[in-house]
Length: 105
Image (cartoon, rainbow, N blue to C red; front, side):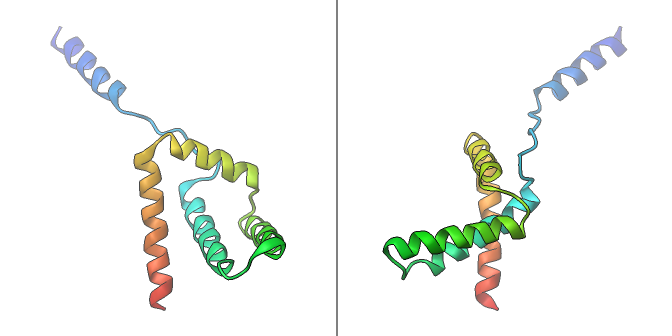
C-alpha cells in the first residue's frame, strides 16, 4: 500500500511539471538567427524609403539562407515563444549576451 501511495505521489509531481514543446526552430539555432536579424536591423537604421525595404529583403533572405530556415518557420517560432514569456525572455537574454560579446570585440 505504501508503494502505491509513493507511486501516485511521484506520478502527481511528475505530471505537474510543464513539458516544453519543441519549437519549429530550436532555441540553440534561434539565438544566432535573432542576433543576425538585430544586426541587420541596426545596419538599416540610416537607410530610408524603398531602398530600405529592398535591402531588408536581401538581408533577411541571406539570413534565412545562412541559417537554413525561412520566414514561416521563424514567424511560427516567434508566435510560440510569445505564448511562453519566460522562454522568450531566456532566448532574448542569450541574444543580448551575444550582442554584448560582439560589441566588446
